[in-house]
Length: 415
Ligand SMILES: Cc1cc2nc3c(=O)[nH]c(=O)nc-3n(C[C@H](O)[C@H](O)[C@H](O)COP(=O)(O)O)c2cc1C
Image 1: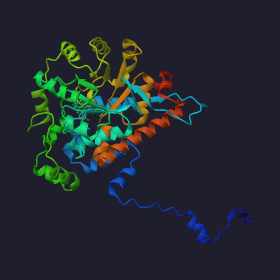
Image 2: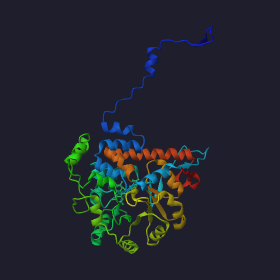
Image 3: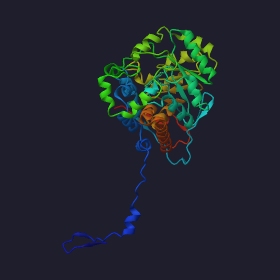
Image 4: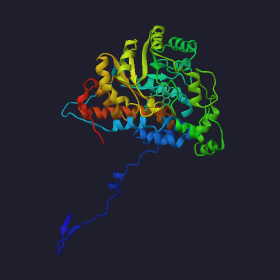
Protein backbone atom coordinates (compact mmCIF):
# COMPACT_ATOMS: atom_id res chain seq x y z
CA UNK A 1 0.00 0.00 0.00
CA UNK A 2 1.19 3.54 -0.65
CA UNK A 3 0.01 6.88 0.64
CA UNK A 4 0.91 10.50 0.00
CA UNK A 5 2.34 12.44 2.96
CA UNK A 6 1.12 16.00 3.72
CA UNK A 7 4.41 17.15 2.12
CA UNK A 8 3.36 15.41 -1.08
CA UNK A 9 5.87 12.54 -0.76
CA UNK A 10 5.04 8.98 -1.72
CA UNK A 11 5.13 6.72 1.40
CA UNK A 12 5.43 2.94 1.05
CA UNK A 13 3.96 1.09 4.00
CA UNK A 14 5.97 -1.94 5.19
CA UNK A 15 5.18 -5.26 6.87
CA UNK A 16 6.99 -8.30 8.27
CA UNK A 17 7.16 -11.21 5.82
CA UNK A 18 5.67 -14.46 7.13
CA UNK A 19 7.83 -17.58 7.58
CA UNK A 20 5.71 -19.52 5.10
CA UNK A 21 6.11 -16.79 2.54
CA UNK A 22 9.91 -16.83 2.95
CA UNK A 23 9.98 -20.61 2.71
CA UNK A 24 8.07 -20.38 -0.56
CA UNK A 25 10.78 -18.13 -2.00
CA UNK A 26 13.66 -20.37 -1.08
CA UNK A 27 15.06 -22.25 -4.03
CA UNK A 28 18.32 -23.79 -2.82
CA UNK A 29 19.69 -25.98 -5.56
CA UNK A 30 20.80 -29.47 -4.58
CA UNK A 31 24.59 -29.26 -4.54
CA UNK A 32 26.27 -31.28 -7.29
CA UNK A 33 28.84 -33.33 -5.40
CA UNK A 34 30.66 -34.64 -8.45
CA UNK A 35 33.27 -31.97 -9.27
CA UNK A 36 33.36 -32.69 -12.98
CA UNK A 37 29.59 -32.52 -13.35
CA UNK A 38 29.47 -29.32 -11.29
CA UNK A 39 32.13 -27.67 -13.45
CA UNK A 40 30.50 -28.68 -16.69
CA UNK A 41 27.00 -27.70 -15.63
CA UNK A 42 28.22 -24.13 -15.19
CA UNK A 43 29.58 -23.93 -18.73
CA UNK A 44 26.99 -22.30 -20.97
CA UNK A 45 29.18 -21.57 -23.98
CA UNK A 46 32.18 -23.12 -25.72
CA UNK A 47 34.22 -20.17 -24.44
CA UNK A 48 33.21 -21.15 -20.87
CA UNK A 49 34.57 -24.64 -21.58
CA UNK A 50 37.74 -23.05 -22.90
CA UNK A 51 38.19 -21.16 -19.61
CA UNK A 52 37.85 -24.37 -17.62
CA UNK A 53 40.19 -26.16 -20.03
CA UNK A 54 42.81 -23.47 -19.59
CA UNK A 55 42.71 -23.77 -15.80
CA UNK A 56 43.08 -27.55 -15.87
CA UNK A 57 45.60 -28.18 -18.64
CA UNK A 58 49.32 -27.42 -18.58
CA UNK A 59 50.33 -24.51 -20.75
CA UNK A 60 52.14 -26.44 -23.51
CA UNK A 61 49.28 -28.84 -24.40
CA UNK A 62 46.68 -26.09 -23.95
CA UNK A 63 48.56 -23.76 -26.29
CA UNK A 64 49.15 -26.60 -28.76
CA UNK A 65 45.36 -26.93 -28.98
CA UNK A 66 44.34 -23.30 -28.70
CA UNK A 67 46.99 -21.77 -30.92
CA UNK A 68 47.45 -21.27 -34.65
CA UNK A 69 50.31 -20.48 -36.99
CA UNK A 70 52.35 -17.27 -36.98
CA UNK A 71 50.10 -14.33 -35.97
CA UNK A 72 47.09 -16.69 -35.74
CA UNK A 73 45.18 -14.39 -38.09
CA UNK A 74 43.67 -17.29 -40.06
CA UNK A 75 41.83 -18.45 -36.94
CA UNK A 76 41.02 -14.99 -35.58
CA UNK A 77 39.54 -13.86 -38.89
CA UNK A 78 37.47 -17.03 -39.25
CA UNK A 79 35.94 -16.55 -35.80
CA UNK A 80 35.45 -12.84 -36.42
CA UNK A 81 33.66 -13.55 -39.69
CA UNK A 82 31.13 -15.74 -37.88
CA UNK A 83 30.63 -13.01 -35.29
CA UNK A 84 30.08 -10.48 -38.09
CA UNK A 85 27.10 -12.34 -39.46
CA UNK A 86 23.81 -10.52 -39.23
CA UNK A 87 20.92 -12.96 -39.32
CA UNK A 88 17.74 -12.05 -41.21
CA UNK A 89 14.95 -13.69 -39.19
CA UNK A 90 11.50 -14.63 -40.48
CA UNK A 91 8.55 -14.53 -38.09
CA UNK A 92 5.20 -16.19 -37.41
CA UNK A 93 6.14 -19.67 -38.51
CA UNK A 94 5.30 -22.65 -36.37
CA UNK A 95 8.72 -23.55 -34.99
CA UNK A 96 7.53 -25.70 -32.11
CA UNK A 97 9.45 -28.59 -33.60
CA UNK A 98 12.83 -28.07 -35.20
CA UNK A 99 14.64 -30.85 -37.02
CA UNK A 100 18.45 -30.60 -37.07
CA UNK A 101 19.03 -33.91 -38.84
CA UNK A 102 20.80 -34.14 -42.17
CA UNK A 103 21.71 -36.83 -44.68
CA UNK A 104 25.43 -36.66 -45.26
CA UNK A 105 27.28 -39.01 -47.65
CA UNK A 106 24.44 -41.47 -47.57
CA UNK A 107 23.65 -41.60 -43.86
CA UNK A 108 21.42 -39.57 -41.59
CA UNK A 109 23.20 -37.65 -38.85
CA UNK A 110 21.48 -36.04 -35.86
CA UNK A 111 22.98 -32.65 -36.64
CA UNK A 112 25.32 -31.17 -39.28
CA UNK A 113 28.35 -31.22 -36.99
CA UNK A 114 31.13 -33.80 -36.87
CA UNK A 115 34.30 -34.23 -34.84
CA UNK A 116 37.26 -33.25 -37.01
CA UNK A 117 40.53 -35.17 -36.90
CA UNK A 118 42.88 -33.93 -34.21
CA UNK A 119 46.31 -35.35 -33.55
CA UNK A 120 47.70 -36.38 -30.20
CA UNK A 121 44.36 -36.08 -28.48
CA UNK A 122 45.28 -37.99 -25.31
CA UNK A 123 47.75 -35.24 -24.53
CA UNK A 124 44.88 -32.77 -24.07
CA UNK A 125 43.13 -35.11 -21.65
CA UNK A 126 43.69 -38.77 -21.00
CA UNK A 127 40.31 -40.00 -22.33
CA UNK A 128 41.38 -38.62 -25.74
CA UNK A 129 40.11 -40.44 -28.81
CA UNK A 130 37.82 -42.70 -26.78
CA UNK A 131 36.00 -39.65 -25.43
CA UNK A 132 35.60 -38.15 -28.92
CA UNK A 133 34.45 -41.36 -30.58
CA UNK A 134 31.93 -42.34 -27.89
CA UNK A 135 30.56 -38.80 -27.47
CA UNK A 136 30.07 -38.56 -31.25
CA UNK A 137 28.35 -41.94 -31.31
CA UNK A 138 26.04 -40.92 -28.46
CA UNK A 139 25.17 -37.66 -30.23
CA UNK A 140 24.54 -39.43 -33.56
CA UNK A 141 27.32 -37.64 -35.44
CA UNK A 142 30.55 -38.79 -37.15
CA UNK A 143 33.98 -39.01 -35.54
CA UNK A 144 37.26 -38.75 -37.44
CA UNK A 145 40.41 -40.44 -36.16
CA UNK A 146 43.62 -38.67 -37.16
CA UNK A 147 46.72 -40.34 -38.63
CA UNK A 148 48.40 -38.71 -35.63
CA UNK A 149 45.94 -40.26 -33.17
CA UNK A 150 46.99 -41.65 -29.83
CA UNK A 151 44.63 -44.63 -30.10
CA UNK A 152 44.77 -47.15 -32.90
CA UNK A 153 42.17 -47.61 -35.63
CA UNK A 154 41.20 -50.98 -34.16
CA UNK A 155 40.86 -49.63 -30.62
CA UNK A 156 38.57 -46.80 -31.77
CA UNK A 157 36.47 -49.29 -33.73
CA UNK A 158 36.22 -51.44 -30.61
CA UNK A 159 35.21 -48.64 -28.23
CA UNK A 160 32.52 -47.28 -30.58
CA UNK A 161 31.60 -50.13 -32.92
CA UNK A 162 28.18 -48.64 -33.60
CA UNK A 163 29.52 -45.13 -34.26
CA UNK A 164 30.19 -43.58 -37.67
CA UNK A 165 33.98 -43.66 -37.57
CA UNK A 166 36.10 -42.06 -40.26
CA UNK A 167 39.84 -42.15 -40.80
CA UNK A 168 41.96 -39.14 -41.76
CA UNK A 169 45.05 -39.79 -43.82
CA UNK A 170 48.18 -37.75 -44.31
CA UNK A 171 50.14 -38.91 -47.34
CA UNK A 172 53.54 -40.08 -46.16
CA UNK A 173 56.69 -40.30 -48.15
CA UNK A 174 56.36 -44.05 -47.73
CA UNK A 175 53.20 -44.81 -49.77
CA UNK A 176 53.06 -48.45 -48.72
CA UNK A 177 52.81 -47.47 -45.07
CA UNK A 178 50.06 -44.94 -45.86
CA UNK A 179 48.10 -47.56 -47.71
CA UNK A 180 48.61 -50.11 -44.93
CA UNK A 181 46.73 -47.68 -42.66
CA UNK A 182 43.99 -47.30 -45.24
CA UNK A 183 43.61 -51.10 -45.37
CA UNK A 184 43.34 -51.23 -41.59
CA UNK A 185 40.66 -48.52 -41.59
CA UNK A 186 38.71 -50.49 -44.18
CA UNK A 187 39.04 -53.73 -42.22
CA UNK A 188 37.82 -51.93 -39.08
CA UNK A 189 34.65 -50.79 -40.87
CA UNK A 190 35.47 -47.09 -41.28
CA UNK A 191 33.25 -45.91 -44.14
CA UNK A 192 35.06 -42.74 -45.15
CA UNK A 193 38.63 -41.69 -45.79
CA UNK A 194 39.49 -38.04 -45.24
CA UNK A 195 42.59 -37.00 -47.13
CA UNK A 196 44.14 -33.87 -45.61
CA UNK A 197 45.96 -31.87 -48.27
CA UNK A 198 47.07 -28.67 -46.55
CA UNK A 199 50.22 -29.91 -44.80
CA UNK A 200 53.09 -29.99 -47.33
CA UNK A 201 55.07 -28.53 -44.44
CA UNK A 202 54.21 -27.82 -40.80
CA UNK A 203 52.73 -24.39 -40.02
CA UNK A 204 54.83 -22.06 -37.87
CA UNK A 205 53.19 -22.70 -34.50
CA UNK A 206 55.08 -20.13 -32.52
CA UNK A 207 53.43 -20.90 -29.19
CA UNK A 208 54.77 -24.45 -29.39
CA UNK A 209 58.27 -23.22 -30.12
CA UNK A 210 58.13 -20.69 -27.27
CA UNK A 211 56.81 -23.32 -24.87
CA UNK A 212 59.50 -25.79 -25.91
CA UNK A 213 56.63 -28.18 -26.60
CA UNK A 214 57.78 -31.73 -27.28
CA UNK A 215 56.01 -35.00 -27.91
CA UNK A 216 55.66 -36.56 -25.44
CA UNK A 217 55.71 -33.59 -23.02
CA UNK A 218 59.02 -33.37 -21.19
CA UNK A 219 59.63 -32.63 -17.54
CA UNK A 220 61.61 -29.42 -17.25
CA UNK A 221 61.73 -26.96 -14.37
CA UNK A 222 59.21 -24.81 -16.29
CA UNK A 223 56.72 -27.62 -16.93
CA UNK A 224 57.00 -28.89 -13.36
CA UNK A 225 56.24 -25.42 -11.99
CA UNK A 226 53.31 -25.11 -14.36
CA UNK A 227 52.07 -28.55 -13.24
CA UNK A 228 51.58 -27.61 -9.60
CA UNK A 229 48.08 -26.11 -9.99
CA UNK A 230 47.07 -28.83 -12.48
CA UNK A 231 47.54 -32.06 -10.56
CA UNK A 232 44.70 -34.01 -12.21
CA UNK A 233 46.22 -33.69 -15.67
CA UNK A 234 49.63 -34.85 -14.46
CA UNK A 235 48.13 -37.69 -12.46
CA UNK A 236 46.37 -38.88 -15.61
CA UNK A 237 49.47 -38.43 -17.73
CA UNK A 238 51.76 -40.35 -15.39
CA UNK A 239 49.39 -43.19 -14.46
CA UNK A 240 47.80 -44.15 -17.82
CA UNK A 241 49.27 -45.75 -20.99
CA UNK A 242 52.33 -43.85 -22.19
CA UNK A 243 51.45 -41.21 -24.76
CA UNK A 244 52.41 -42.21 -28.27
CA UNK A 245 51.17 -42.00 -31.83
CA UNK A 246 49.20 -45.22 -32.14
CA UNK A 247 49.58 -45.45 -35.92
CA UNK A 248 53.16 -44.21 -36.22
CA UNK A 249 56.50 -45.31 -34.88
CA UNK A 250 57.39 -43.72 -31.57
CA UNK A 251 58.69 -40.20 -31.93
CA UNK A 252 60.78 -38.03 -29.69
CA UNK A 253 60.99 -34.44 -30.85
CA UNK A 254 58.92 -31.42 -31.71
CA UNK A 255 55.65 -31.60 -33.64
CA UNK A 256 57.09 -29.50 -36.45
CA UNK A 257 60.06 -31.86 -36.84
CA UNK A 258 57.73 -34.83 -36.90
CA UNK A 259 55.48 -33.34 -39.58
CA UNK A 260 58.39 -32.24 -41.71
CA UNK A 261 60.14 -35.58 -41.54
CA UNK A 262 57.06 -37.63 -42.38
CA UNK A 263 54.79 -35.76 -44.73
CA UNK A 264 55.36 -35.55 -48.38
CA UNK A 265 55.55 -32.12 -50.01
CA UNK A 266 55.60 -33.72 -53.48
CA UNK A 267 51.96 -34.91 -53.30
CA UNK A 268 49.87 -33.75 -56.30
CA UNK A 269 46.44 -34.26 -57.82
CA UNK A 270 47.94 -37.36 -59.51
CA UNK A 271 48.24 -38.88 -56.04
CA UNK A 272 44.66 -37.96 -55.31
CA UNK A 273 43.62 -39.89 -58.43
CA UNK A 274 45.75 -42.79 -57.26
CA UNK A 275 44.17 -42.87 -53.81
CA UNK A 276 40.73 -42.71 -55.38
CA UNK A 277 41.65 -45.90 -57.25
CA UNK A 278 42.73 -47.62 -54.03
CA UNK A 279 39.77 -46.76 -51.79
CA UNK A 280 36.22 -47.70 -52.68
CA UNK A 281 34.51 -46.01 -49.70
CA UNK A 282 33.68 -42.30 -49.44
CA UNK A 283 36.62 -40.01 -50.07
CA UNK A 284 36.64 -36.50 -48.58
CA UNK A 285 39.41 -34.06 -49.48
CA UNK A 286 40.09 -31.75 -46.53
CA UNK A 287 41.90 -28.44 -46.73
CA UNK A 288 40.50 -26.92 -49.95
CA UNK A 289 40.90 -23.14 -49.99
CA UNK A 290 39.76 -21.95 -53.39
CA UNK A 291 37.22 -22.57 -56.13
CA UNK A 292 39.62 -24.07 -58.70
CA UNK A 293 40.95 -26.70 -56.30
CA UNK A 294 37.42 -27.58 -55.23
CA UNK A 295 36.55 -28.32 -58.85
CA UNK A 296 39.77 -30.30 -59.39
CA UNK A 297 39.06 -32.42 -56.30
CA UNK A 298 35.53 -33.04 -57.53
CA UNK A 299 36.88 -34.10 -60.94
CA UNK A 300 39.39 -36.42 -59.26
CA UNK A 301 36.45 -38.33 -57.83
CA UNK A 302 36.15 -36.94 -54.29
CA UNK A 303 32.70 -37.52 -52.78
CA UNK A 304 32.93 -34.30 -50.78
CA UNK A 305 35.39 -31.55 -49.96
CA UNK A 306 36.07 -29.78 -46.71
CA UNK A 307 36.75 -26.07 -47.02
CA UNK A 308 39.25 -25.61 -44.24
CA UNK A 309 42.42 -23.76 -43.34
CA UNK A 310 43.21 -26.40 -40.72
CA UNK A 311 41.87 -24.24 -37.91
CA UNK A 312 44.45 -21.57 -38.74
CA UNK A 313 47.31 -23.93 -37.91
CA UNK A 314 48.98 -23.94 -41.33
CA UNK A 315 49.07 -20.90 -43.63
CA UNK A 316 48.67 -17.58 -41.82
CA UNK A 317 46.44 -14.95 -43.51
CA UNK A 318 44.61 -17.77 -45.28
CA UNK A 319 41.12 -17.36 -46.77
CA UNK A 320 38.21 -17.69 -44.35
CA UNK A 321 36.67 -21.05 -45.35
CA UNK A 322 33.09 -19.98 -44.56
CA UNK A 323 33.35 -17.09 -47.05
CA UNK A 324 34.29 -19.48 -49.86
CA UNK A 325 31.03 -21.42 -49.64
CA UNK A 326 28.83 -19.44 -52.11
CA UNK A 327 31.38 -19.38 -54.94
CA UNK A 328 32.37 -23.00 -54.47
CA UNK A 329 28.71 -24.00 -54.41
CA UNK A 330 28.20 -22.24 -57.72
CA UNK A 331 31.17 -24.04 -59.24
CA UNK A 332 30.53 -27.60 -58.02
CA UNK A 333 26.75 -27.63 -58.41
CA UNK A 334 23.91 -28.35 -56.01
CA UNK A 335 24.47 -32.08 -55.57
CA UNK A 336 28.13 -32.17 -54.56
CA UNK A 337 28.72 -32.06 -50.80
CA UNK A 338 30.58 -29.11 -49.35
CA UNK A 339 31.79 -29.39 -45.77
CA UNK A 340 33.39 -26.55 -43.86
CA UNK A 341 35.42 -26.03 -40.71
CA UNK A 342 37.61 -23.48 -38.89
CA UNK A 343 36.41 -21.03 -36.28
CA UNK A 344 33.14 -22.71 -35.27
CA UNK A 345 32.48 -21.85 -31.62
CA UNK A 346 28.69 -21.48 -31.53
CA UNK A 347 25.66 -23.33 -32.88
CA UNK A 348 24.73 -20.16 -34.78
CA UNK A 349 28.00 -20.50 -36.76
CA UNK A 350 26.80 -23.90 -37.95
CA UNK A 351 23.39 -22.50 -38.89
CA UNK A 352 25.07 -19.72 -40.88
CA UNK A 353 27.32 -22.17 -42.74
CA UNK A 354 24.33 -24.29 -43.75
CA UNK A 355 22.40 -21.19 -44.80
CA UNK A 356 25.36 -20.12 -46.94
CA UNK A 357 25.19 -23.43 -48.83
CA UNK A 358 27.35 -25.95 -46.93
CA UNK A 359 26.05 -29.47 -46.26
CA UNK A 360 28.00 -30.18 -43.09
CA UNK A 361 30.43 -28.62 -40.60
CA UNK A 362 33.30 -29.96 -38.49
CA UNK A 363 34.69 -28.85 -35.15
CA UNK A 364 38.20 -29.17 -33.75
CA UNK A 365 38.79 -26.92 -30.77
CA UNK A 366 35.12 -26.65 -29.77
CA UNK A 367 35.19 -30.33 -28.80
CA UNK A 368 38.78 -30.30 -27.52
CA UNK A 369 37.95 -27.54 -25.00
CA UNK A 370 35.18 -29.82 -23.73
CA UNK A 371 37.60 -32.73 -23.57
CA UNK A 372 40.13 -30.76 -21.56
CA UNK A 373 37.38 -29.41 -19.29
CA UNK A 374 35.98 -32.83 -18.41
CA UNK A 375 36.86 -35.83 -20.61
CA UNK A 376 33.98 -37.61 -22.35
CA UNK A 377 31.39 -35.72 -20.31
CA UNK A 378 33.05 -32.49 -21.38
CA UNK A 379 32.75 -33.46 -25.05
CA UNK A 380 29.09 -34.39 -24.41
CA UNK A 381 28.63 -30.94 -22.91
CA UNK A 382 30.22 -29.14 -25.86
CA UNK A 383 27.97 -31.02 -28.31
CA UNK A 384 24.93 -30.30 -26.16
CA UNK A 385 25.80 -26.58 -26.03
CA UNK A 386 26.18 -26.43 -29.83
CA UNK A 387 22.95 -28.37 -30.37
CA UNK A 388 20.95 -26.12 -28.03
CA UNK A 389 22.36 -23.00 -29.68
CA UNK A 390 21.55 -24.36 -33.14
CA UNK A 391 17.96 -25.19 -32.25
CA UNK A 392 17.35 -21.81 -30.63
CA UNK A 393 18.90 -19.95 -33.58
CA UNK A 394 16.80 -21.91 -36.07
CA UNK A 395 13.61 -21.19 -34.12
CA UNK A 396 14.42 -17.50 -33.94
CA UNK A 397 15.12 -17.50 -37.67
CA UNK A 398 11.80 -19.20 -38.38
CA UNK A 399 13.45 -22.27 -39.90
CA UNK A 400 12.05 -25.69 -39.00
CA UNK A 401 14.66 -27.74 -40.81
CA UNK A 402 18.10 -27.31 -42.31
CA UNK A 403 16.52 -27.47 -45.77
CA UNK A 404 14.64 -24.24 -44.97
CA UNK A 405 17.87 -22.34 -44.32
CA UNK A 406 19.14 -20.36 -47.30
CA UNK A 407 21.33 -17.36 -48.11
CA UNK A 408 18.45 -14.95 -47.45
CA UNK A 409 18.89 -15.72 -43.72
CA UNK A 410 22.39 -14.24 -43.55
CA UNK A 411 24.19 -11.01 -44.28
CA UNK A 412 27.83 -10.18 -43.65
CA UNK A 413 28.44 -6.91 -41.88
CA UNK A 414 31.78 -5.16 -42.18
CA UNK A 415 33.32 -3.49 -39.19
C1 LIG B 1 44.99 -29.67 -31.67
C2 LIG B 1 44.60 -29.87 -33.10
C3 LIG B 1 45.14 -30.94 -33.82
C4 LIG B 1 44.79 -31.15 -35.14
N1 LIG B 1 45.27 -32.25 -35.82
C5 LIG B 1 44.84 -32.50 -37.08
C6 LIG B 1 45.23 -33.70 -37.76
O1 LIG B 1 45.93 -34.54 -37.21
N2 LIG B 1 44.77 -33.88 -39.02
C7 LIG B 1 43.96 -32.97 -39.66
O2 LIG B 1 43.59 -33.19 -40.80
N3 LIG B 1 43.58 -31.84 -39.03
C8 LIG B 1 43.98 -31.59 -37.77
N4 LIG B 1 43.56 -30.47 -37.12
C9 LIG B 1 42.62 -29.54 -37.80
C10 LIG B 1 41.17 -29.95 -37.54
O3 LIG B 1 40.87 -31.16 -38.17
C11 LIG B 1 40.20 -28.88 -38.05
O4 LIG B 1 40.46 -28.62 -39.40
C12 LIG B 1 40.29 -27.56 -37.26
O5 LIG B 1 40.49 -27.81 -35.90
C13 LIG B 1 39.01 -26.76 -37.44
O6 LIG B 1 39.11 -25.52 -36.79
P1 LIG B 1 38.51 -25.24 -35.31
O7 LIG B 1 39.49 -25.81 -34.35
O8 LIG B 1 38.40 -23.77 -35.25
O9 LIG B 1 37.17 -25.95 -35.22
C14 LIG B 1 43.90 -30.25 -35.78
C15 LIG B 1 43.37 -29.17 -35.06
C16 LIG B 1 43.70 -28.99 -33.73
C17 LIG B 1 43.09 -27.85 -32.98
